[in-house]
Image 1 (spheres, helix red, strand yellow):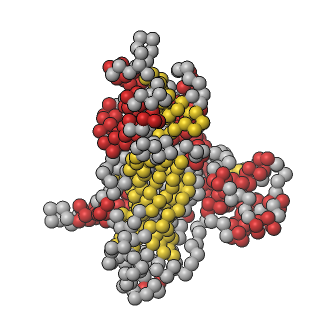
Image 2 (image 1 turned 180 degrees about the vertical axis):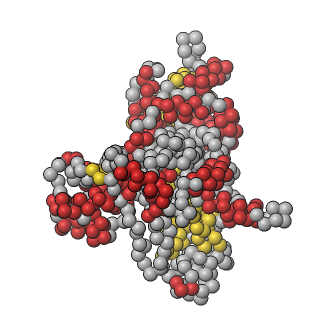
Image 3 (image 1 turned 90 degrees about the horizontal axis):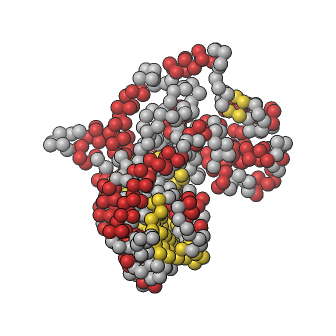
Amino acid sequence: MAAETKMVKDCVLNHSDNDEEEEENFSDDGDWGDWEEAADKDDDDDGGFESDFVCLFCDSRFVSCDLLFQHCLPSHGFDFHGVRKELKLDFYASFKLINYIRSQVAENKCWSWEALQKCQLEVNFPWDDEKYLKPFWQEDSLLYSFADEEEVEGEEEEEGLDRDDLIEDLRKLGDLSIVDDEAIGESSVSNNDKCKDVSLVSKQSSADGLVVNGKGKEPRVCDGRLVGRNIRKVNENYFGSYSSFGIHREMISDKVRTEAYRDALLKNPSLLSGSVVMDVGCGTGILSLFAAQAGASRVVAVEASEKMAKVATKIAKDNKVFNDNEHNGVLEVANSMVEELEKSIKIQPHSVDVLVSEWMGYCLLYESMLTSVLYARDRWLKPGGAILPDTATMFVAGFGKGATSLPFWEDVYGFDMSSIGKEILEDTARVPIVDVVEERHLVTLPALLQTFDLATMKPDEVDFTATATLEPTGSETEARLCHGVVLWFDTGFTDRFCKENPTVLSTSPYTPPTHWAQTVLTFQEPISVAPASVPLLSGDDDRRGGAIGTKECPASSIHLRVSVARASEHRSIDVSLEATGVSSKGQKRRWPVQIFNL
C-alpha cells in the first residue's frame, strides 16, 4: 500500500537552495573554521563540551572517541585501532565489535578484552552475529564517529573516505537507524529539524529535508533522542494519509495490482468458499468485497483510519454484504490497528483461514506494514492457513543515461543545458527516486536480490543484507555507463494456496507499469560496463590504461551489496548500497557506500 507521498523529485529540485544556505556556514576554504572557533570558545566556558562518548568498559565519559580509545589502552588493555588492523575488521565488523563489547560488559562488569582468548578469535569472531548490527545503546555516540579513513586493499588506488566529509554526511543523516550490515531505499521525504548534529564542533541542527549522501562508508545509526518520538503520532499521520480518496482511486485504478488480487480471490474457490478471511488494511474494502463475492463465510476488514473504516462500512452496506445486528451479510469492519484488534471485535486467536493484505510500499518495504501482517499471521491465522500473497521477491538491475534527466537537458530547443542535468544527477545520488524506468534504459541483466516466504518468515527478517551481481546486457558491442540501480518487486500468489489459479503481481520494468513504479538509486559516479568480449580501449586490463569502471577499462560485472532496514523514523526504511566493479581479469574497484532513506 504505497501512500501518496511527496515525490523525492521535489526534494531534489529544492535541494540546491538548501545547499546554498548551508554553504554560508563554511569558511572560504571549505572547512568548519568558524564553527570550530565557536566550539573552542564554548569549550572555554564553564559548561564545556557535553561528554557524549562513554567508555566501552567503565562509566568514564569523553568529548571525543579518540580520547576514549586513548583511555581504553592503558586502563583496559584494549587497543581498538590495533585490533581492527590485526583482525582486518572492516567498518561493519568494527561496528558489531563495539556493540558486542557493550553487551558483554552489560552482562558482566568484570568482562575484559583479555578474557576473550586469542585462540577463539582464530576460529571465529563472537561478534559476527547479525544481531550486533543493532545498536546496543540507542544513544551510543561512539557508533557515529569511530571510523578512520579506510584504505581499500588491492592493486588499484581507489577513492578513500574523507573523514570530514563522512562526519558532515552523518550529520545530515541524523535521523537514520542502523541498517543491517549496510542499507538499501525508496522515495518519500520527511523533513526533520530535530536531527542531532553528530559533529562535536557544531551543535546546530541538521538541515531541513532529507539529505542522504553516498560518501560515508558508515551505516546509519539512529540518534537515541529521535527513537523516543511519539510513534502513535506517526501512525496517526500515516493512517490519516489514507483518508484521501485520491490515493484509493490511484491504487484501485492500478489494474496490475487490483486484478492480481481479484484473480487470487475469485478464481480459487477451494481456498475461499466457506472460509474466514481477514483483510489487513482494507481501505475502501475492495479486497474484502472480492472475498465476500468469492463465498467467504466471514470477512473481517481491519482498517486503522477512522474515516476509511466508515467509508468501508458504508460501501459494504451499499453492496449488501455488511454484517451486524441489522444486516445479514458476511463482512464486518473493525476500526483498529491489527495489533489492537481484540479491543474492537470478538475474534478467537488462530481462527482465520485466509489472511489477505495489500501491504507493499515503494521498494516493497516502505511503510513497514509487513510487520503488522506478520503479527496478524502469528496471532489470527490457523496453522496451515493461507496468506495472500505468500511470496515477495526483490530484484535489481543497472540503468543507463536514458533513465536520467541528462538527455532532456542536453538539447533544450537547440541549447545545451547539460549543466543542469549534471547538477540534478549529483543531487539524486543523495536521495532515492520513485519513477518508471523503461526496459530499454537498462544496461545490465536483472538479478535477484532477496526473497521472502511470507508464510514462514520471522518479523526480524524484514531487515536484510543481500548481494547480487549485475552483468552487462550481452547484446552490447561497446561500453555503456551504468548510472545506478533500479529496484522492484514481485509478489506471488503461488499454488501453495492458490491451487486453481496461481498468479504474480509484478512491478518490473519488463511489465506494464504500476503505481509503485520502481525505486531508483543513483551512483555518485557512473560505472562504465561492457561484456567481457568487448575489447578495451586500453588494449588490456592494465590499470595504467584506466581505472576499472572507466571508458578505457569498463567493468565486466558489478557486484552489489545492499541492505534494507526499518529506520528510526517510524514506517521509513534505510537503504545502503555498495558497488564493486570487476574487470574481465578479476581485478576490482570498490566505490564508497551510499546511504539512502525512504
